Length: 384
Image (cartoon, rainbow, N blue to C red; front, side):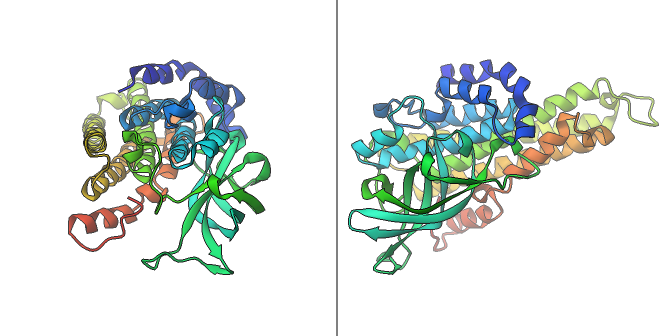
């Protein structure tokens, strides 16, 4: 694991704490935070080394996201989302990859979901679409959007009967940002909608995660990109839960609940709940990193990750996210009336973790997807 990157994330703790409330109010990461994250190379952790990125191993990446989220969930989330987009550099030819990812301070982001259309015209695509949840969009130099390919006026279908879906990358200057991010949790991520209308994208600045193989051959790019995004979301949730437990422990030592003569920490119910939460959080975290290590070993040894292990990665990510939410719920409940005030960090942890649980890659449908694989049933595994 890259200890230097983890130490750099820990060193940002005072800065993140100082600007956390500003991010909540402005619904975006503050300029000082973005500059520090750019300078530290966090947005480019998954960009290939050949283009100046860190090409970090998955465990280092997820642990770094976890550490950032422990101090500020929105900062951790933006790195999880934007840094993962850097893996796309591995799928582009060299000229296009250098155009988008070659600048040392560039930030990329966007949305993988195919909510746009890409009309194929000669060696270009004419792209139109609107995508929700474009995290960190205000700080991006390049953005990407998933698109259904349209050819000769009709949706292009692949041989197996599925639609052809491609990611198109365009400069942020060609994107309209639609202010939609008025939400309960992860407010500082600035995850607004983005819109483009008939933007012409050269063919070499598009790729398909379903049918194209990465050109870069490092083991990171044999690791499943959707799986890594899910794991980093779990890292955010783990960071939030750890922060919530730390806050509750500190509070319990000084708070005496109404109509009680004992401090919160002295109550048996509190002691049992804190112990159970600690055990649940540690267990979920250990499973997550154990599966990351197994998947990483396969990627290094075989140049690919098996469907069974991809399912295990997604299972661990979903479990860690759900377990983290349960821990935060416990701390929020133990905090009593104090938890509902904006001055209490517990209410923000509650809002943030429940925003994280809503992501489709760690949502309830993942239990069904991974369960089908475990049961040996026919399963569409492309997005594992």
